[in-house]
Amino acid sequence: MSNGSSITHFLLLPFADRRELQLWHFWLFLGISLAALLGNGLITSTACDQCLHTPMYFFLLNLSLLDLGCFSTTVPKSMANSLWNTRAISYTGCAAQVFFFLLFISAEYFLLTAMSYDHYVAICKPLHYGTLLGSRACVHMAAAAWGTGFLCALLHTANTFSLPLCRGNAVEQFFCEIPQILKLSCSHSYLREVGLLVLSVCLVLGCFVFIVVSYVQIFRAVLRIPSEQGCHKAFSTCLPHLAVVSLLVSTGTFAYLRSPSISSPSLDLVVSVLYSLVPPVLNPLIYSLRNQALKDAVRKLVTGCVSAATHCLLSSAKGSQCSS
Image (cartoon, rainbow, N blue to C red; front, top):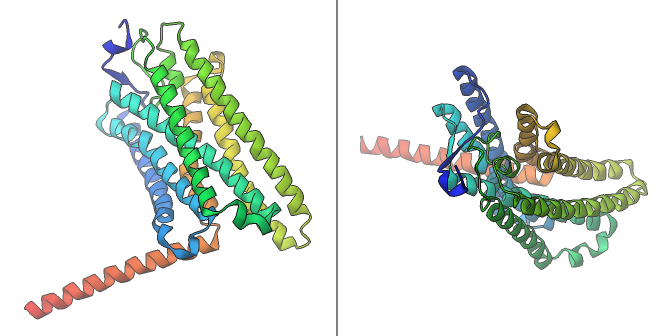
């Protein structure tokens, strides 16, 4: 294989060699997918609720869409490979997986940065909240997050798959990931991708510094709140967000900038699961189920669906009795 054009497919890393364990992997990932789909899908379904048309819920809606896209990019193919006992993914499919995963995971991180600003304004400048975070400003921040994610994904994907690949086609990961693709390159031009990764890390660290500074101001304001209940509410809102950001930054940075000397298939697998699968499952729990207004909207939605289904069943039963 002298270059990338001669490669028609890649071989992904299986979770297990034994057939029984492969099926266990399939059922495990199916459970994770259903949990992520249910949690994020319920949040997305409440978008029409007039009570939730605020900046925080607007950002949560975008976060749920990104989470749905993130796990939908990697998990279904891994499940299919385990179910059908194969490792193959096409060259085009691998490139598409890299692009969409980077798009969703990058946009999610930039959106989390915007959400930290939302928390900062809500706690430190509550009187200016409506002015600083109007509908137009929220749309612009969300569009910036999606647009920046798209640009990062496009640059990294185009640069990575323009490199000549001559070290086989076995990707040591359960989905196509840039560091694993770079291991297959035999050209020194991979340094261009390293340069792009360094620039991306600088951007990520810049956002992280912004988040940390925002939370320093938030914690200073919260500690001045005389009410213990108010302090508890503010901390319960901010700390989970900071924990998710820290998990995403630490695992993502380790995955893309770790030294080859500390790299191993099992370690890489654990790190990739932490930053690609854990946030889509935990985000609905952290940001939504802790929020009473959103829980009320979900309860109203579920009740409405159940009532509509019951009405349809009763109508069908009455129609059958009349025809008989």
